[in-house]
Image (cartoon, rainbow, N blue to C red; front, side):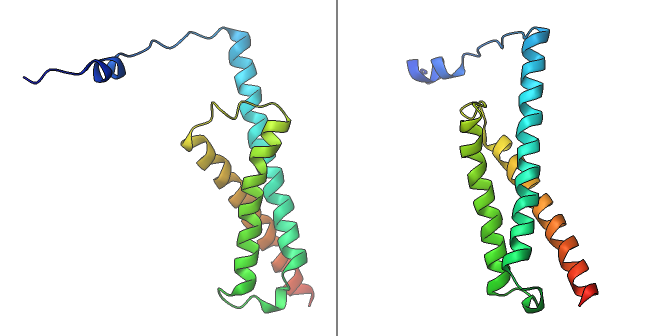
Length: 125
């Protein structure tokens, strides 16, 4: 059996997780709610911006205007990190799964708000 190097042995040692008390659990819960609310709010804002910037009459299929709206949504996801830093939320503790969740929430609210605004604009025209 090959000998394990000291580095691999150290990596395999599991660090027990610290038990959180009720106050720490509540603080983490409130922090997650704030992060989700920010993602939803930014998604709605970017959806409204997409509606205002991209003309509804030129949206036939996937073209340059839909790419512009998609890039606006991606910019909203990037802006979230800076808002989290300004609000002193724990961004270093967020892993890839957390950022994927934040991005999905922004995308979902962007898509829903933009679709609603586009459907009402088409009915009115």
